[in-house]
Image (tube, rainbow over all chains, first blue to last red):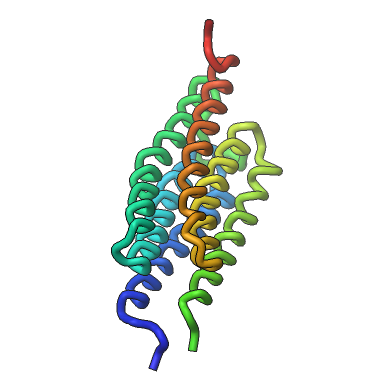
Length: 107
Length: 92
């Protein structure tokens, strides 16, 4: 038998999904051709991956004070991460960075 | 068989690997905006790395450090975006 319980298996499934989304976001940051497309990859994949990982930690922890702190961390990441991405993208757009079109070379 | 500490060890090593992949864009990225975006992504990955380290060493104190680091990273990203947009941080 395994040395772990059912809640541990559920938390391992959540953490595996989180690692998948974080690796996908990192590959998108490396491989996409433009600044805006790179932010499109990281802004969504990173938020979902981190929230899934911390949810796995919450399920592993159970009901305690640390779990409440992890819930606050999830809430803050859901609030802060898209706002930061939007701020960087607005700054790049107002300073005149042109979006990439099909057929141009990578920038 | 494996314990739960091994699972958190695998999680920590995987996050460190993704941070290494983002570090290429933070160093070689064409233009300052790519570098700022990569540094923001690295900062948000470090939050989860801190939580995993807290479970590896079995010290729940690391969650507080992760909360504080999340706030600092958010404020740093906003200040950097405002500075790049206007050329100054706060107008008098």
